[in-house]
Length: 96
Length: 96
View (cartoon, rainbow over the protein chains, first blue to last red):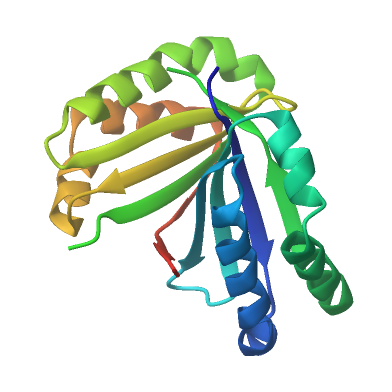
């Protein structure tokens, strides 16, 4: 079965970047240890600090559900909620 | 040297999707043949037809410049210009 892709876009006010960096790092490190994960690549727009794309690939929908229940993901969601950060999550499918 | 990533977001009115599909297909097929390309993954948001993310990886900035001069890329840019399609290109860097 094809892995399931996620493109998450995070728009963080630059002044929060330093403070939230450890939560982002814990999110990446924790996600990469999950058995259901294939790719978890946190990238930052070099011309706009605080603008991130997370390129993800998961083995199944169940793996994504499990991810959403992990401490590192929940800590991330709580942290960005408090800061009013924009997060958009798309589950796109490869066309070719 | 790390490959250079690009996340391109294309927002196409759904009514143009069918008409522009061949141009998108030629863009992907052409880009994958370019020696400077590592990844060229055109993905579509399953809940919003016409909303695409292209996940790209290139060997160098020079490879990207050459890509921008190819017939398949120029045909794509012309086609979306005519349709007033929103295209945003980000060159993000992996953080970890």
